[in-house]
Image 1 (tube, rainbow over the protein chains, first blue to last red):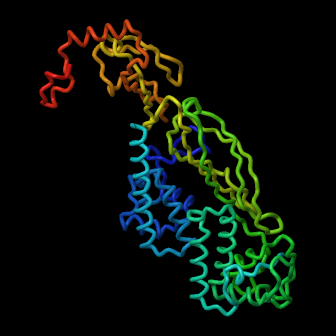
Image 2: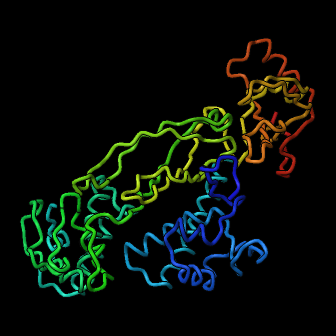
Length: 110
Length: 317
């Protein structure tokens, strides 16, 4: 993630988070992350070319997904959620986020 | 090391089945989960419940826990000399060990492997804070004082609410609802573990004049009837000092006049815009002369703003 302050990371759609950062910060396993991507609940924005990274198929995600992924990881630990419940939870969290955003925009125009 | 009665915490008997323990945990977890519970003590209670469940749900850990025997909650105790959790009669200090540490180290240990008590690296806790800043602070960037309390384990392994004070820099370019991650600014790691992270959720305090739409700002611009009709130049406040705004002749209420680059800063150094929303306001106490002049205008003007109603207006005046 690029930013002016090395300690400060912007969690929004203008910044990216690599798969390894997402795993480190969320506590999900690589298998769980793959499950979420395969289920369509999490959409990588691009793949890092093999020339840049040592791993092939290394994904990059929008920075704003980290918050929802962290919550899903926490709920998984708190309630022993199965993988299919994780993907449903993530989809619902994303829908809530978009609705809150639309509501905020609507209120600001009033 | 203080004893915790995990069965009591979950509200089950010592002979409860795995299913009963799971059911009890789920019920309590739902009740005290930080995303659900409004109870200020709920977070501590939830951690307690989680610790109890983590031990009792695992058959190996549960057997080791049962072998500790039963003690009053909160009482200092030592595992018995031949406790299944120790190896080959080794003795070591339990002074800096929390009960949960015994079981965290227990699983996966091979025969003969030494137990090092409470010295495994523990990553510090992540903190999440919602903070409110003014539009002026968002415009210029600011340092904020963060004061918060979180439940943490003290040196005696007891869960207590600990106060933290921390200064955080909020850079220019944040928007309402912006989320920031400050690496390493969460709870302190233990035994060489990394510090946790701090997640900030930025909200804007409602401003008396400006409304926010992403990085654009809106301000209601009251104008008189004659300013709207004839046009005028008026002073408009911005977050960076007032500007003169030319109102073209013939403006109606609801029209937006764009003041370029006077909105909130973006991350790429550009700025959003400020939109002045025209609102024609009638004088609440017109003088007699003003009333007389308005009557003259009413007499001579043929303007009908309601022509689209398609109604006969001959008897209106």
